[in-house]
Image (tube, rainbow, N blue to C red):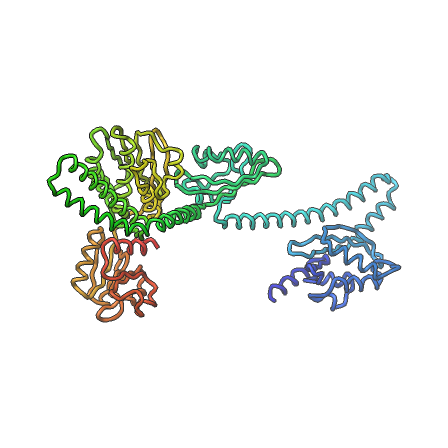
Length: 616
């Protein structure tokens, strides 16, 4: 109400008559000169008064001169007002006075009208005309038209200024909306330079700078990435809409790009979105479906096959102990080797159909690769050379060492088989942005086209009867479970590239609250083995006193402390992990909102719990 009163007071100080009608043609506000100029009753100057009632009052009073059909005149003026078009006009009123009417639409709907008494100007013009013996009629006519044009120009300028303001506000809103979209929206001209961006490119293409206007796509995205986009951009510039996906080499992300031709022919509009999670889910579902089919086919046979192998191994072992002639002894050894290979195949089937867990823990990758080399070199033979190189920072990483070593061992043995006794195998490890990249290459013949397409499918093999077809499938599953990616390629020989999320095993300062000294000691040893520092508390009261120590990273507490519940430590401004021997369905655990470790737990389970809570 205060704002409305201030607005009216300000408008009343203006000599010109002003009225503002809303989109429903009801009066929003007017000033006193408006009422005085047209001698309007109070009812027609109150907020909400209808424009039609005002026009009817003026028409019937003769404001617009004699009218043969007043109602038709009223309807025409109301219909004209509803078009909300900018206008300027001058008219002679019934009382002999001249007024100019200047109207402009409003962005919210409705319009504002300014009425100016120009009677004095008109009298001066008439006076000039009457005393113009020394002036030609042509000069006077031009002067009069110029005066009218100036007034019309002023009205037009006001309308243009309002239109500019509306356009500016609209552009600002558009930019704000596009900046909030979790995608990169841009325009690229025919020279492949960015002419518009919503400044979200670095969220989609990590490493691209935020300031890209005027820069080329190759400069912003890199030559390798832009080389994948350019053919589609050429087609979009020529008028063909494009939707496609690319892999972003620096980050490993999967990006979906939609290109829409600019109708003016000046380039194309770009919409880029990160669909990595979608693609991974799609691949995981497809792979899971294949694994489910394989499991369904094999699980029924695995039990019976295991029983048969047990019998065969038992009989063959008995025969091996007998004093047989050399040919028969060799047959027995060959049968034993085949049976043991069957056991290996059963283990692979079990791994394929069984549940998997990702168990990360702090790992020294250099040490893991050294152990891998020591383990595999004796199996490669004298004419196969294994080299391992790494370019990674000092420190430990959160990895599942067993799964990673199994995956690398599988890939090295696959490469060995492809080399057929002679060649080279290279393993490289490097930091690649947010990823740990492991690349295994060999100097063999490389993957066949079918292997590149189907290599990760369960039971697919190019080794004929010598392969189970489970190796690459198991590696793929292990890497996906860890949130990574695996890519097969040929570069001279076969190349397998694994990317795993880079997670530093950051040392923490942990407040350990446990009232059992033996459990406290065992848990402390686990934490110290992972490189963490530990402060201990024997009960809840002591833990509460220590919870505000500077530098603390998190609290690890037993749920049932002697003097209270460890859940009370959730009030501290630190992440909390609780430990308990209670089963998961126990009532005391159902209301908890923090991670809970079930006792007993091992070092890997503890490391996983700490990683989850610190990542969050």
